[in-house]
Amino acid sequence: MQFGIFSVADITPDPTTGAVPTEQERIRGIVEKAKLAEEVGLDVFAVGEHHNPPFATSSPTTTLGFIAARTERLLLSTATTLITTNDPVKIAEDYAMLQHLSGGRVDLVMGRGNTGPVYPWFGKDIRQGIELAVENYHLLRRLWTEDVVDWEGEFRTPLQRFTSTPRPLDGVAPFVWHGSIRSPQIAEQAAYYGDGFFHNNIFWPLRHTGQMVELYRQRFEHYGHGAADQAIVGLGGQFFARENSQDAVREFRPYFDNAPVYGHGPSMEDFTRETPLTVGSPDQVVERYLTMRDHVGDYQRQLFLVDHAGLPHKTVLEQIEILGTKIVPVLRRELDALRPAHVPDAPTHASLVAARDAALAAEGEPPYSDAYRFGTGDNWTGLTAEGGEQARRQAELKERRDRQRLAASPAGKGTDHE
View 1 (cartoon, helix red, strand yellow):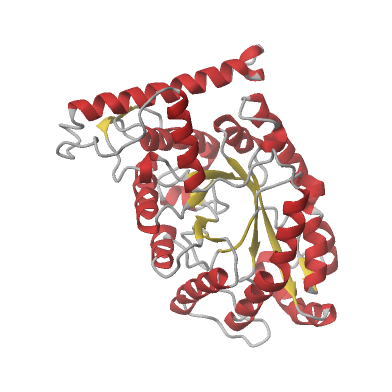
View 2 (view 1 turned 90 degrees about the vertical axis):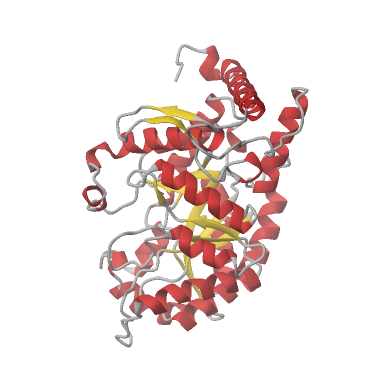
């Protein structure tokens, strides 16, 4: 199981001192937290995408590329890449580039975001949010899996014989998690493609999380990707820990009570009872998060929000240290022991490459090679004749496997051909 942290880099005053970090301090602090996450044994670091104050994370690929150069094994991800307001062509290019720079240490969470004004800022209509997410992602997949794409849709200008460059590393696109808190359409989208589903449930009751994950699992099986319990699930979480639980409660309370993110709503006690937020000792955090599989089944990724609400940078580093040395080792051991053998790990670049190579071998096809691809690299003259034929054949093989899978699935056998 993968464990990690995510940041949205909110610039929030510290309610105990009134101190406000600068954008420079916040951005540089993200890098320091990511490096520490790797040092203490965490698997994943993810950063959000916002284009409005008080956030300082408008360019995830720039941030993650910088972190990639300063880490060695940390998996780099996003805590939402805005599939609705970003151009799918630019997403395809940027994250394939990050793949190459990081040696494949990248995946991403696709989402619509939670800031309404961002839509008109980028020339989009929030009332078309779901439609944008569906169409843009379909195009993105084609850009990553087909060397030459002809496209015409509703929300962007057509593409004629377009090749997105660089091509995905080793011919395998970054793994995609579809992030949603409340939209069943996005859970359906994740299930249709056999992608991951990430429910960032930090502000929602666990019963709601369980319902959304169960919908995704049922539809994953419906489309023939495997049994429901083999679906790829990730969760968000929050904690604040000190060796003594009373110290944790006392220290965190002013941040909870004053942070805009909590909306001055329920008490901390009510909030921790209803949501995954856990404030206490490391043992209490472990105990709470061991129960998450009771709500969603065996899952593959757990990310924690630790640097928010105005918490000082030093305090956040202490929380990462506690997470990596006292909480995650126990969770990893206990949850891995409980997980049945047929439930997969979260996909990595290496596992996706191995699966692709196994599929080619099963078809009697030669191993994948990217040496054939380009003659001039010009979208007008395109691939070499030999490369174009091989690319076309590989695309056809993939389409055939997808058709066979769908035909054998409940979706193909029934009357509901979605």
